[in-house]
Amino acid sequence: MNKFISYSLIFSILLLFTACKKSFLDKNPLTQVSQSTFWKTQNDADLALAACYNFLCKGNNATGVSAAGAGWGGGYMFWETLTDNGYTVSTAANFSTISTGNIEPTIGGIQSDAYNFSYQAIAACNLLLVKIKEISLSDAVRNQYMAEARFIRAYHYFLLSQLYGDCVLTLKPLGFDEASTKLPRSPKKLVVDSILADLDFSAANLPNTGYTGHAVRGTALAYKAKVLLTNGRFQEASDAARLVMDEHKFSLAATYSSLFLKPGQNSNPEIMFSARYAPPAFYSPQDWLFSYLNNVNVLNYLVDDYECTDGLSIQTSPLYNPAKPYANRDLRLKMTVIVPGDWRGTTAATAFDPKAIAVPSGFLPRKGVDLSRFPTTYATQSDQDWVLMRYAEVLLMYAEAQNEVSGPDVTVYNAVNLVRTRPTVTLPVLPAGLSAAEMRNKIRHERRIEFALEGQRFFDLKRWRTDRTVIPTIKDPNNAFRTFPARDTIWPVPQAEIEIARSLNNTAFKQNPGY
Image (cartoon, rainbow, N blue to C red; front, side, top):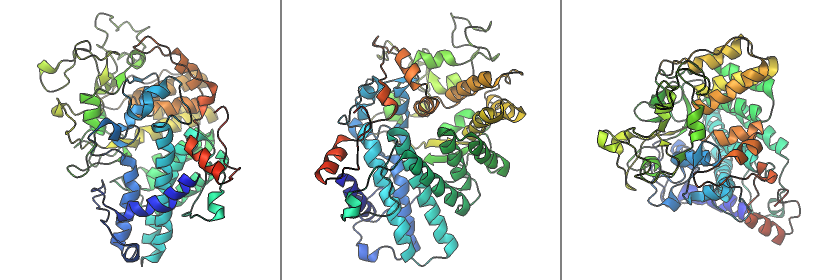
């Protein structure tokens, strides 16, 4: 607990006043600036806000696996390895260990990074929210800065609430006083209420425009829908998603693959929030991680789940040919996955042979990997942003929530079919007459395919409470089945936090059950 307090007070100050690379918002946080001379001008506010956004990009400019930021920014794909979509033998952030069900309070890696790093980001946001009041700004401008900071705070609290359940809830900078060191973990419901309050403030004070790197009204509303959906508040989730749809500030990109590489990402009407990169000062390790190190393998469970072009599964479609298993398939398959024989680069000599390069699953990611950079090295400077929210998700969140409210009405069909029939996907529309349960399964399938390898599957399985049934069915390429202890529905708080809380006699700060 004291570790959290020290992060809140010290790291948030150091973050803003020590050397830092150029951010994706084209702002350079200050180098050795005194606290007494900062928080004076709007430029100071810009630098502080850029520092808050930079937490999305842990591991940028990485030159080693330990610094690659697995689980963050360009390393977000690692979350797929905790599901039936992906597999890794990499030790980065201990994803491989956690995927097998061996998670303990002392394991470290993403289990502690997700906790500590999120609280560092929250601390930086809390500091900005207090100090912005010292800068001479109009109320409207100040409220916009505060709205962005509150959105980022909500984003990190949402992650914490999904992983750990109850959270230490603090909305202002903390110190070393008795009250700060004795904070309990607040019930998850209170944390969710705080997240929604932050998102409502953000939606009311952010510009209602397209996304250009800063969160906008649509971004906040989309995350409001996601938080509500995750917490089973279906009518409210449907309403929030519908509002984004009705305000017409976003639309589906005509070309699916344009969402994941530059320059297609620039001014893309579908992208609503992303971790952004701008080489050479601020670049992503994405191509190096997934094209050189091959740190994420794609599992056959995902590959087999892509429909044929007639909209039927490979088990029922007459178009499926086991001798040519990747022909006549949903076009998103080849835009997402490298299958045997596909070029990894720009020439036939780069054709993928999984045995020759020891890829045990037989498949590699295509999505978000730039062919023009192959073969890559640790020095490869990737510029592609990692997309965290896009309009296709708003449509599918609306469909999911509305189906739970009223069943598969025409608006549910329309939302799903828009995703399935975009020009570069062109799948048939869903069959008429589906029941609510059948539509639920169709929507879940569509989410898996549409967002494959984007880091969504782990949180979807958790939200649907199917993680405990799906995970034990996974047989990894090493022939071992995964396990899923029931306690893993939420992760343990890092043991270091528990020990420090005990040393401070903070009896209100407790570990999650089962750990």
